Image (cartoon, rainbow, N blue to C red; front, side, top):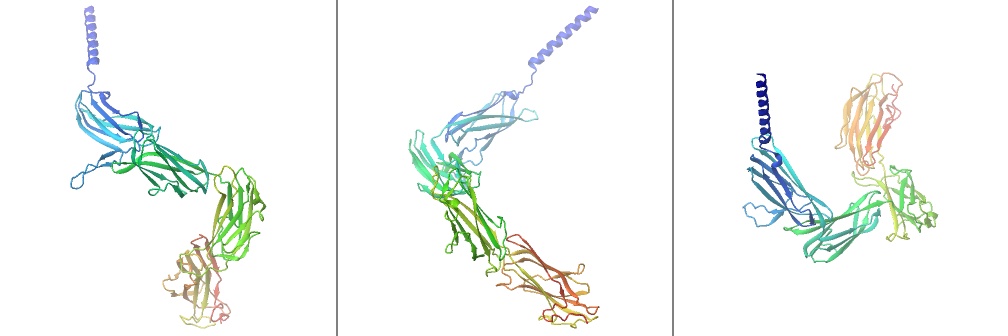
Amino acid sequence: MTNRILKWLVLFALALFIIAIVIFLFGKPSFSEDQVVLELEGPTQASVGDEVVYKVKYGNQTKLELNNLRFTFNYPEESVVLKPARPDDSGHSDGDKEILKELTETFAVDALQSGESGEKEFRAFLVGDRGNIKNAKVQLEFRAGTIRSSFEKSDTISTTLVSVPVSLTLVAPPSVVSGQTINYILDYRNESNDNISDIRFEFTYPDGFAVQEQTPSPSGVNTWFVPLLKRGQGGRISVKGALMGREGEVKTVSVSLKRGIGGEFVNYQKAATSSLISNPLLVLDVLVNGSRDYSAHLEDRLQYTVRYRNNSTSNLIGLNLEVKLEGEMYNLETIDTNGGFYDSSSGTILWNAAVVPDFSALLPNKSGEVKFSVSIKDDFPSGGVGGRNFFVKTAAKLRTPNVPSGFGDSEVATTANLVTKVGTQPTFSQTAFYNDPAFGSSGPLPPETGQETVFTVHWQITNPGNDMSNVEVKAALSPGVTWKSIVSVGLGQSEPTFDANSSEVRWNIGVLPQGIGGLAPKYEASFQVGVKPSVVGQKPVIVKDGKFSGTDSFTKEQIIFNAPDLTTDDLVDRPGEGTVQ
């Protein structure tokens, strides 16, 4: 009995093992993502400007139907893709082609049965330079049978640009001193086996480059058109100009070769090169009163210091320094050139080796300085109202025609400019009247105890210099002084206001234009206050703590000054009669 049971157990285990093997061999899932084919074919090498063909091949080797297949094809960077032009509103198309703006295309396949396959072509002109690697990519998103999740696949191909039909050699100096005159030279040659037509060269200059001369003359703005470039034929384009920049800046010039394709000139080939702004051979700096940011005022004495240094490894001989004084605020009658020659016809001070020994031969790394001084005028010139700023400027230039070997320029030169702003100088006056010309008089004078006397306070402002902002005048009424709510201002001006909690009168002007009190009338406000004294022999204070404040809109200086307190004894029309009786 035991042997029979054992026999059946062995047979049962063997059956289970056979079933497991069958399931393992024949019970695999009917779908495998690896059996979905997606391949991207294309050339691994090409010439710049070649039109290449990419083929997207796809297939379904699974047992399930694939559906909702969405393909996204990404063209290589900078490619030029031509597509048939869109029909006009009437549905007509003349067969022309247009450039695809986006370098991405999509297409869809609703369903792909088991065993089915397909392919789609994409064409593009490759743009770049020899040695560039251009990558194209295709992505596929799809669903399989009744499986709820979606699947993704992708493939990429790289194409190396191994040759160029037109060789471009763009040359620029590797290092440049700011302000130096340089030459950009482009040499080009048709290295293909065919003639090339309808090409043009477009230069893109760096910031700070000023064109002086172009050879040959361009066909348009920084553009040279070549109708036909025969096989083996070449040419040269030369551009001369001055390059400005800060030390350490990299300045890049580039050239695009464009070819007429599909009725448009499209990028076909590119070349670029860079120059580094290096230490200038000469360094020049200008300070006034020890600073580059000094703000001057009327009658200021300006002490200028011009500092120079030889940064080169060569002796610089025969130097000349010129400093031009610009601006109507200089009082040129007060100039002290410290040995230099002042040319009044050009407003320029000149120094040479006869005055500055360093200028005969300035040794490498040698530095020095030249000084001169001049005063600011004692008044602003007359002019219109508002919108005018006052400043003075020095423009210094140090140069020599004796150029060390290795430098192609006709002279070694450096410049430095300094603009010094001249701050405005407003005035503020605070006065009081008993018998005011506009309001008349009220109450006894001298003041008497128990009786009210009314006084009129006047505020006047002038501003001959720059515009001002945030301008305000304020003062406090003394205890026992009452606000009469009677005010007067000039046409279009704001009125003073009184704050009973603080006993403060405020006149918020805001913007104070330049020229007020000159060609334009002064700003003026007047208001009345009453004084009822109680102590005999006093001279009551009418207003106190008067203050003018505002900001020079040009120099950004904060301007504040105070006005003396006004008593009943300080009247314009009845001075010395303010003692209480």
